[in-house]
Image (cartoon, rainbow over all chains, first blue to last red; front, side, top):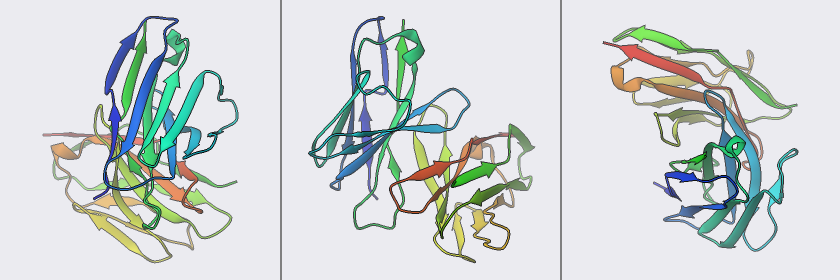
Length: 116
Length: 111
């Protein structure tokens, strides 16, 4: 089946640094990818929709300058957390759909960010 | 607006017990309904889905039936195993792009 892969799975960084998380669709082309954030014991919060070749669409309340999204190719979207702070520590998950598929979302393994 | 309400957890069951996790939805149209499972430290995996009323999704012994009259999509399994311990998310999608997730229900199965 379709596979979406994220890298890195774990990242620890110092406050004030930037961290990039990659999301790849391994066996299909994804014109649209979705970035979610999950707080401990809570549901997924959609942060933004990443569109290949154009600007991402951010959900209300999500800082565009803080969470930079780039979807440069049909198989890769990146999320960069800029000037990270401890409150940015979270589990970030990307997902994608097969364009001609049955509508289900395929999720990456998730990336746990810890900002010290 | 469109939303999903699912049973709050955590749920703790003994092995071989019967499982029900309730899920109800509110939608302006005719959504597709999904159950996703998240094992510790991992992303979400599709468990099962149903795309229209009266459809039954099933996988790995889990079942859920799309009930339009009660706007429900309850997850059931007749005999749970320790390996079923995970967080279960109910979700709906109308357009295929926008998904609405429930808050998740944590299940722990003890031997």
